[in-house]
Length: 247
Image 1 (cartoon, rainbow, N blue to C red):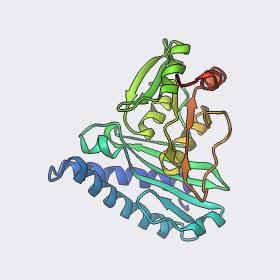
Image 2 (image 1 turned 90 degrees about the vertical axis):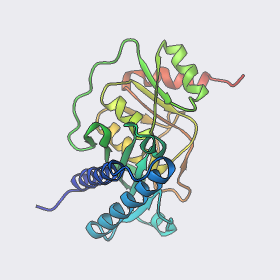
Image 3 (image 1 turned 180 degrees about the vertical axis):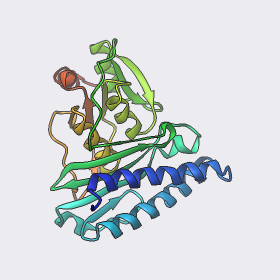
Image 4 (image 1 turned 120 degrees about the vertical axis):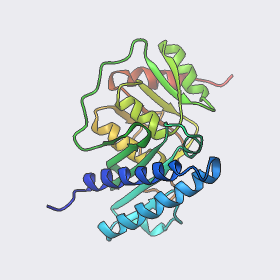
């Protein structure tokens, strides 16, 4: 039986994670040098395998020169071979590998590998969501928490949970370790396409910070903001985010 898109995404994300763990385990590199080597090695494998398995599809990777012709295609694979380069280089576990397929601008298939945790989460057959945390937990950057997110957390009485990569944060909501991930500091399509596909499949709310849908395969892959949260919290989070005003 032919490998489905979801199976391909999960297999490749897991394989890239294995490459990254093995490279770090050699101990020959550290810090930025390790991150660069990891990005290069994982990207080379992912791009090679996607092009071999889906030769008619387009490809957008953080580590590849962009081909504007992709915007004219319905199916585009969107890849981040190492999301959380800093965390990876520091020996932490809160980094990820993203492999996603956007179809007609929608994050339709995705897999996020969390190699440090020994798991890959897929948009195919997601596990049921766990009950909400009490008090609520809201994810923020471990180095630069967004003021909007801090404000929303205060209004909700939520605890702040610092974490590394975007993929690790999004999957923390999928896994029930947190309830809200609001990011307003700017990302790119490869930072969140796979996490969005997995989160949507799990039944979570996904949107821009103003509640509008997220579209992929744009000529400019920059995405200003993102909200992933439990569906029952979306109304309050969006309302408080709209109320926020810098002082």
